[in-house]
Amino acid sequence: MENSKSYEIYLFVLLFVILFILEIIACDLSYENYGWSQQLIFNFSLVFNLIPAILYILKKKEMAICSLLLIASIIIPKQFILANDLSRLREEVANIANYSYRMKLTTGKFPIGINDYKFKYEDLKDRIDYTNYKDKDDFEVWYYV
Image (cartoon, rainbow, N blue to C red; front, side):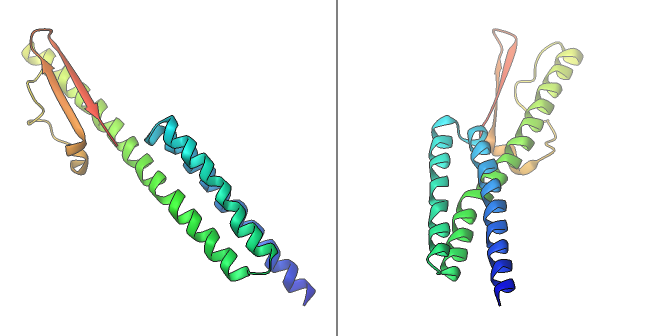
């Protein structure tokens, strides 16, 4: 009986530590995804992890595990999804810049738009803005997560 109790505590602590580490990583990613103000909010949200710990100490194990999973599911997935999108956006924008400079080499000017550009990630097309400055012989590529 005592052995299973210590095993149960060990599993809860292990789950808690793993999810807490993932939440810390997600909070760091929130800086890249949103900026410093949102990162501050996400870092503050780590305090909510005291709730499952307190519930577990008060012998409300099911509520502790449910609240632990709920807090983790609110913080972790969105940041990892946005970080993946950001990584793909950066790659796509680099490809657009490469395309623009190749067009400049072949035609002598930057493309007016990117309608002829073949996107690697079609789903990110609406998150990228391309502007050609004809008078400056320059272009700009903006993106947002």
